Length: 313
Image (cartoon, rainbow, N blue to C red; front, top):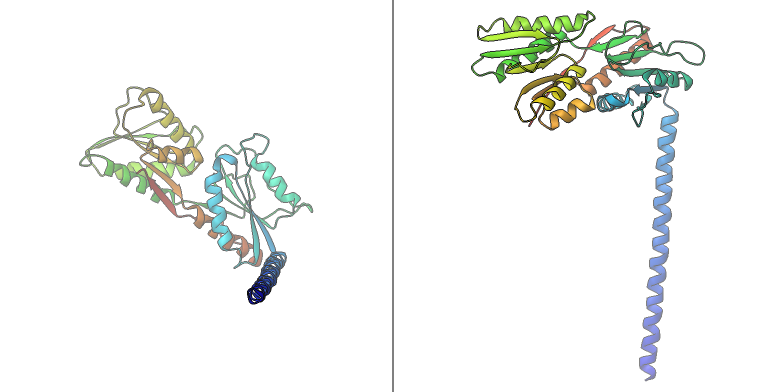
């Protein structure tokens, strides 16, 4: 009986010993990982604080998708140019949070540079200035606004874009024969639209079986095989028109633009193809141009961006 009691006490002591070792080992590991994590955060924060430039990427709520992609491209270049890149987009659709308000905010925090996606509805923009009233270096893409003192605009070779759209439209026809309707309701002269349109018409003229017309909007009796929209607004209006009057009819619509609504239409198969610029490449090019300007005092006034074509599944 005494022997069994001694064994029991010994086993109990061993259990207490191992539990104590396990407890102190656990405490040590917790302290080690917490310390390592804090050191990691410290190094990260110190690295951020030592960055020499603060760049903002901004855009409106309705252009959130493309602005985020531009930001992703710009962020890739942050370490190369020893900079901090931040994204500023309104979290909800509000007329109170305009692109101009974001410009003003950039001036308030003394940003070193701005990369902005300017939508076609962004009107009467004033060049952003810092607290000392100096112009903040601004690079824009999207819609070109000549009144802005942008150091560079990243756009497209619209002749090549037009040719690409025309080639894809021709492929949607049977044996390169059929009717193509180009929708362009831009009442004010726009050199980019003119170049885009001339390029497409020039391509279609090489096919005897293709009839091409240009209209300001689609009509109920239009029986064209392919509809080409020359802006985001036209793309949305055209899809909504056909959804209202011909909801079950399968149509070939080539859209142009990159806002959230256009992408939703593409996912639903309401648009056959969506032509847009390459957003991440724009972010990279913008950072390169911005820091070329900061180091040399000049950069290219116009940079050609890549084009992406998204097709419905």
